[in-house]
Image (cartoon, rainbow, N blue to C red; front, side, top):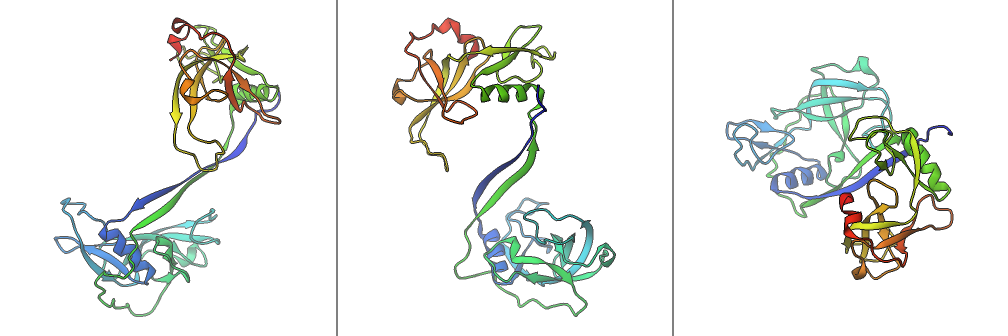
Length: 313
């Protein structure tokens, strides 16, 4: 077999959330170059602010402005900044207790090197030139040797307050499918579907996993399955996915390929969505240059008897 495959993969999705009055004021304040905290019942000022006291769990909404200057309480040097981090050159991650606050805020410190950073050093906010109401409105912190800046005592009320945010969650990683799935993927390139049989329970796993999850033994015997199979269960999709050129409604099903010991996923086409049913016999449809079936369509055979696939539901 050829070398084990590997490829870079990215998982990314936007996370949208609404903001309560405290977070709305905090982020709107950053847009306006104002840092707001929240005062607890016992007088502590929390920055970043939270909506409930972490000690008493009481709701807190008493907003108070703090200074854009503060003191580093602890730090760590970042030798190799990654995509999306605050600075493109090496910097320090720091916890900064802003003047007037009792808790520390995590952000980046622009410093010439680790020797230039120390616990207890004074810093100030460097504001981003363009601000939209996000923590990135603080571009970073920078060393500061001037006098403490007195806050103006902002009330926390703003015109055109920010009421919601969209945060992009992203994970970049390198995936290697391993020996078993490398063979599975290479077979798909030849329009064949292969699994591996467990030497103990004799179940054929598709896609193969390299080991039987039930018996805990390695699987090495390759078995070609299908190409036809049986719909075991299915769902009707009514919400169109972004960047997926498939009109709704459509059917996504579990399909037990002939000779396989468990079902895999596949889209069903070539039949009205409301005529798809358990037991429907289907076959794969390949498109030119594709590495996997585009969808499955009815074979025209009689439906499979329930007893033939009930163990694969």
